[in-house]
Image (cartoon, rainbow, N blue to C red; front, top):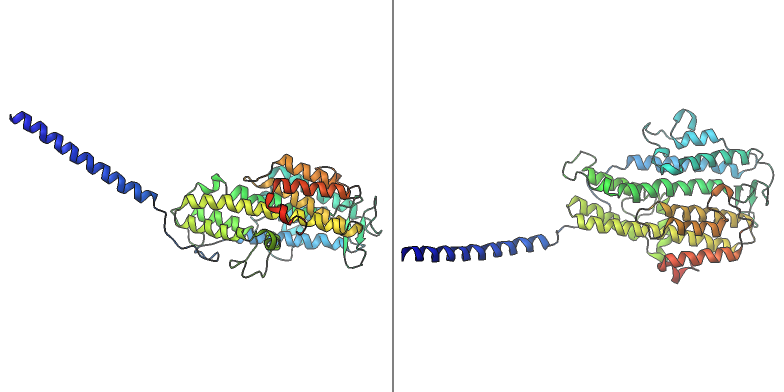
Length: 376
C-alpha cells in the first residue's frame, strides 16, 4: 500500500512540474517575441559618431574634380601624375589645398578591380588635353561649348567628358561600393557591438557610421540641405519623383537598431538602404538620358549628359544587394556608348533610338521609375 501511494505522488509531482515547465516556456517565448522598444530619432543624432575618414575622401574627390575642370578652359591641360597623386593622397605631388591624414586615400577604398581603370583614364585625359587649343568636334578633342554659349566642357575625340567619367565613376566604385558592399556587409556587421570606444562607439556602430559618411549629407538632412556632397546631391534631386530621401530614414533606423541591439531591424535597414541608393543611381541615369534627348542637337549638352549617364549606370555594379545584374548594367552601357569600356565609347554615334532603348531597359529593371520616366 505504501509503495503504491509513493508512486502516485511521484506521478502527481511530475504532472505539476511538467505543467510549470510549459508555463515557464510560454513566458519565455512571449518575451522573446516581443519587439525591442526604443526611440528612433529624426536626425542622425547618436553618440560617438566618427566619419572623419569619409569626410576627407569626399573632399579629396572635390579637389580632383576642381583640378580636372580647369581643362574646360582652352589652353589648360591635365597632368596624369598629379591625378594619380590625388588618387592615392601623395600630398607632396597632389597639390591639394586642404591637408589630409596620410592614412586616408581614395585609391585603396576603390573597388580593387577598377583602380587600374581610373589610372588609365588619368593617362588618357592627359594625352587628350595636351593640345587643348582647338574646339571639340567629332573626331577632335577639345573644349565643346553649348549652343547658347553658357556651358563649356573638355571632351575627347569621341565626345567623352573624362571629368564626369572619373568623378561620378569614383562615386560608384569608391563611395557607393564602400557604403553598400563593404560597411553593410556581414564582415563589417557581424562584429563586436558591446565594447564602446570613446568617440567611435562599438565596432558595429562605427562601421555603420562609416557607411553613412559616404552619403555626403548633414546629420539633419533632408531638413538641412546645406553642404550636400556627391551622393547627397543626387539622392536629394531624385526625391521629388522617387522619394529617395528615404535613404536617410533607413540609415537612421539602422544606426538606432544597432545601438539598441535590434539586429533584425538592422538587417531590414540594410536591405532598404541599399534599394533606395540603387534607385537614386538608376533614376539619375534616366535623368541624364532625358537631358541628352531634350538637347540631342547640342553636342556639348548631349555629350556632357551622356558622360554622366554612363558613369551613374556603371555605379550600379557596386551594390552587393543590387536588383540588377552586371550583365543588365552592361546592356545599358552598350546602348548609350556602344561599349562597356569608357575609353572606347563614342557619343557621336549614339542615336535617339539608342537612348530610348536604354530608358526601356531601366524601367524594365526598376518599375518604380516607369510612371515618371519622362519627367526625371
